[in-house]
Image (cartoon, rainbow, N blue to C red; front, side, top):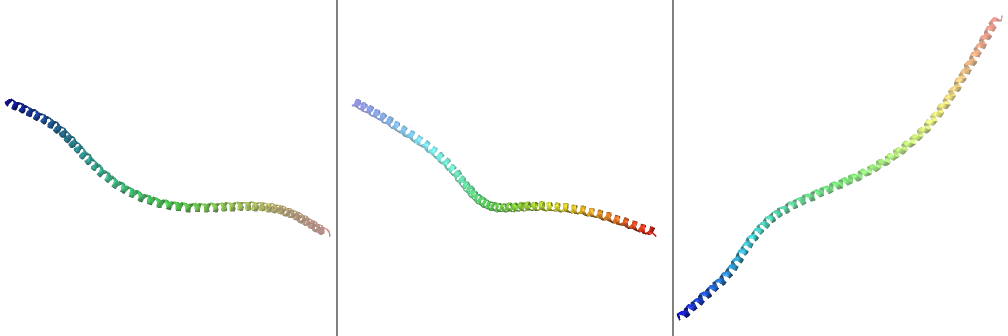
Length: 168
């Protein structure tokens, strides 16, 4: 019985050793899983912290972009108003330019008509000047003839007075 007890004791010790090895393997696997999960948890917390930091940055960027968008919309609205004003002024200036062109065309036509009339008047004046010169030449010729006749008459009178005074 002591041998049986020794064998039973040996079998119990072997069973206990096998049980310890199985438990150790299981606990080791569980411990590795726990370590892996803890490492994953720490990495996830770091990732979450980074994402929260990024989220805060993105939220501040979003707020800044919203402000910029609001400013851009305001600037766009002002630019559209200015564009409308410039387009209105441009239309007015185009209308004025067209009126000035029309006035200039009318003025150029009037100047052309005036130039034609001046040419006609100049031709008329030239004709009158030529006729005046011809009349002056005739007058001078007439005056020369008159003077010649007067001189002839004066000479004839003087000769007749001289002959009358020399006749007794």
